[in-house]
Image 1 (cartoon, rainbow, N blue to C red):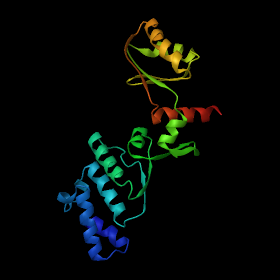
Image 2 (spheres, rainbow, N blue to C red):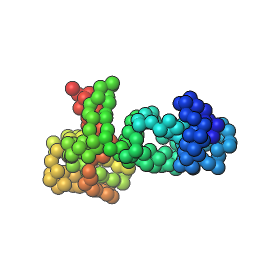
Image 3 (tube, rainbow, N blue to C red):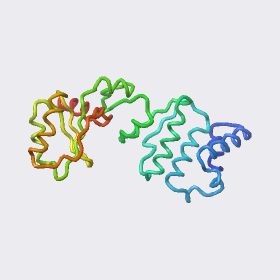
Length: 216
């Protein structure tokens, strides 16, 4: 509470406004019970919530957040993202992050930067529509490393990525991919445990744009 009061004084808020706004923010970010404790004893998630509360003390129209959920555990990450999402419609929030699933979860627009160059600035839905290549998610039992060169060589495949949960194949020709991908997997000697067509993730689009920029 003292820290938020200090931030309020730095913004020249009067005492009554500082007290009421600090109380509201402590309650909003579930810090009321810890308001009298030293910040040094806070968890990382509590410190992140306090930092957001401090940023909101002056009731700004624009909030700039740099890696706001970095180094948090899954529960802390979810709490902070829910808070950021709750600001939608009330504040303009500019958030930098390399975790694209977080962008997908809370953002309405995205800018992708590579080597200091802005590659795209768009709403997420428009970006998906523009890069709406079919994406096949393939899970196999066994090591799929030997399958990747075969997929790369297939003319109906645009790109292949190996992920912890399997392979993601972006296809140039959806019909041929539907017919030939399962047969190619089976012919390689691997057991096909899952095969599905998905919408492109933001991560797929990011990789496509960045790799395309590198090629140019």
